[in-house]
Amino acid sequence: MNAFPKHGPDIAPGMVRLLATSAGLIVANLYYAQTLVGPISAATGLSAAAAGLIVTLTQVGYALGLLFIVPLGDLVENRRLVFVSLLATAAALAAAALSDSAGLFLAASLAIGLGSVAAQILVPFAAHLAREENRGHVVGKVVSGLLLGIMLARPAASLVAGHASWHVVFGAAALAILVLAFVLRAKLPPRMPAHQLSYGRLIASLWHLLATTPLLRRRAAYHAGLFGAFSLFWTVTPLVLAGPRFQVSQTGIAIFALVGMAGAVASPVAGRLADAGHTLTATAAALLLGIAGFALQLFQPASRPVAIGVLVVASIVLDMAVAANLVLGQRAIFTLGAEVRSRLNGIYFALFFGGGALGSALGAWTYAHHGWHAALLTGMAFPAAALLYWAGELRGQPALSRSAP
Image (cartoon, rainbow, N blue to C red; front, side, top):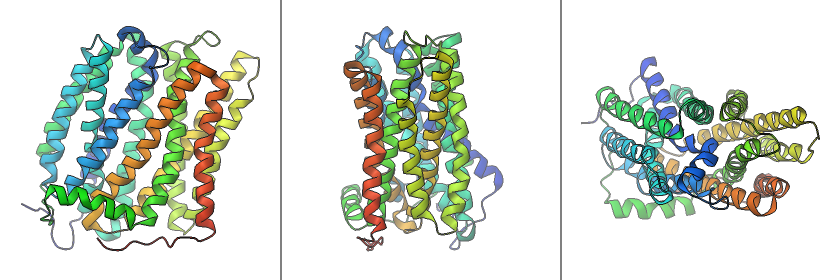
């Protein structure tokens, strides 16, 4: 049943491309709604203060899936796990596409998040497929695909919604994920993990791993700060752009989000810095960029074009920070042992997606009750708190090592 020789196979370039593309398509499901909060809330009857739930519940579902589904990658056959997860995701996306009430759409959003954790089964799957000497390069390519999916999802959703409707966005996504499920079932080799743990013991081991892995805790805390800021920005900014001051169409919001993709250039730079032993410094730079992305927006020029330009620059800076720090974090935790890789990855993503859920919920509430300026200060607080925690690492307080489970 296990297609992995003792010393590991040499993964084919086509398989790397398939895994990268698949990870991007799957994780994109979490972001389609971010630029569509306005039209979805209007169509389903959600209030402005509750609109953040559209993004928050998807992230909550994803966090739950990371804790209770992704660890199964260390226990059950991985190809089957991916296939079943994607079938469930396709069904949830179809339900979202057919929704005409807030309750049904929010329930579908939670389920979309749960099923989309298949992306985080594929990333350690790629690490298992690759040889040791090529593992970092392979994982980097798959993570790059994942990042492109995150960044393309928002503009793609806005463009489709601008020319059709948000229902079409989720319907098309459901069809794409259904097709992908069968492609991966046909193309992926089987992988049966060596663990013989029960599911209960597997889940119980998550706390032990978190408690005994300072590196994991730090990397999750850093990225929770940045991802909270990122989620807040992309929950609130489309509302601001579509509002009375800017009156930007869905197509305009799509172009705005597309420009933010320029931030992905930070990923390979961060990888090279980490390879050269500069992870600590690169992490501080990423957190400072996150703070700068919000500080820049506190200067609100009267000119509408200049104000939009400031928002564009801020989005690029913030996306650079998030892309760089994600690469730094995943590279670090994938050095901690193949036998616990899925669980470490699940804990890491669950913790920082918790930060993302908090950011999107706080952002929508703060903007509705206190305005844009207060939302910016709230967003800035997330990476600022992470930077304070980073200062503890700079002083060399805990040793960043792990005891074997």
